[in-house]
Image (cartoon, rainbow, N blue to C red; front, side):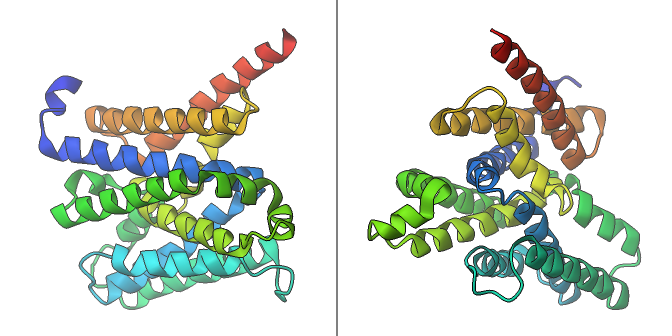
Length: 277
């Protein structure tokens, strides 16, 4: 079958819609994360989400996003707004919590597993699966709704996100409550990581957030240009990755990420050429 024939199926159309929206959200929030040098947070939060997924699987929760999303948002807010008064700071706190959550999730799946094939369940959760092609109607509406919310928040508070990204201390000095916007950004990050797990799995989520932003930064220096380019790259890679996986039967998450790796390489070469001129 050709690509156009596959596009006639409703499940493929749904997968593309959800995939594009999730990839767009990941790209938008990825730029502030990379600029603030919080790239590792996506990886840490995805491990926490894996722990939540394990709990949802054990208690037979129909849609695990209802548990994963609040848990990941709470973790994101806690990690990103702890500040200098925290006893365990920065990357150490992220590493500590993420590794503990990963171990806890794997322990639960092995000890209280409700399915006979534990290895397949764990591999699917860590690296993604074809579940995006079998989304239920409720899953589709939830993913679309949360994606639209993230995009709307980003557009409405674009200037504040820009300010928090580059100079939160100046915002405080100017009398703006930067803490509230930091919490808002952290909550959005938690939502995006939760949604991204459906697309690429726990271990590959950080790639979905980081690679488009890094690619755009190889060529552009202006914040708005980086955001727009990152969004375009992420959407294009998601579309290509999903279609390739459907036609050739490759893993969805890995295919999307490898597509982003190739694009990153091309942007690196382009960036070098621009610098030489």
